Image 1 (cartoon, helix red, strand yellow):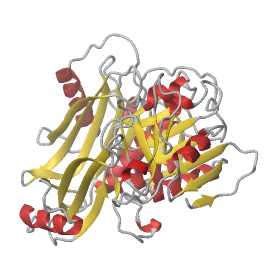
Image 2: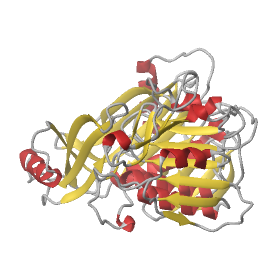
Image 3: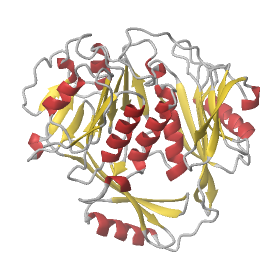
Length: 465
């Protein structure tokens, strides 16, 4: 039987249900459930968290009339595993569904498309599908399309592998606040301040990179919804969904934060516990500033229509110019580690550029990310994060790191990918990608990632997707 933690709130409050568990392969999303449930309760929701999974039928029924439904764990395009079954074929699955998926042919599988359009989940303000590839389409359908067609205001999905902690049986929930669990813990923290879904995701992403030196796929979020501005939905104050809201104005180009006009400031806690100043501007940009005056991150609004005017090369040049103007020490000696198209909001045309400092030919402990609107040239996301390591040292070899990871995981056959960088320490990251596993009709990714201290050989973390 699934275990439930009920956090008391007034009975008339809008409801919030969150579901996760420690899966058989070790993926542990329980902290995401408990932290987000606690945040929702603090915002005034009647919040309930299930930390040992939930059947497909119960998950489906939980969504009816709920203001917020959050699923955290294993998934793939069009499917989300909400619990383990006695066999893989009996795993509990919530699938997106299509127009032909009216009734599920399986006892352990339900469809979002089974909800009656604009009735049973029309009051849902937010649906979170926190797992791998949930924004993509498959024969099971597309979660964004299915939820929007049923009237959900805002849906958060992901277009890439995303990582949660991988733990051994009996591990305390309190010991798992890292990787994806940390991302959702920070999302809840920011949502409690009253910011939009987009800002809460952006800041949680910045915080995770600052803490761990990598986003773990959580930067590849997509926000869709039945309202006109799903990225602008706020969870605070607590309430059910809305029929309509207005489109925001796209951010105009700016070259430095000093050009913006502050209209409000508040104090907030940063990823390392230090106090930050949260600045709201007349131009619609929000940024968080450290006590030394440098900016940790900033969030704007991309355009969603019009002609794309910048090539990828022009976007790269503009992003580099912005970084040089706003990041002390940024220069041509930084390595470009990402240059790709991303999409967070329907209709946007955004280019992501990421740079890392380099030490001994390996990525070092500073990172800058810029997302640029290729229509206007405006920066719509920016972060400048830094680890605590001031030197790089790799006395532990790649082969030794791989051997340690194989001993930990028990995997002696899957080909390993081994990479090196420095953040809070010099480290090796060993990844085993085994492809898909689970029920043959609804398989999910099976990937292990082990971080090893390159100075001592100690295992720093184990995560899984």
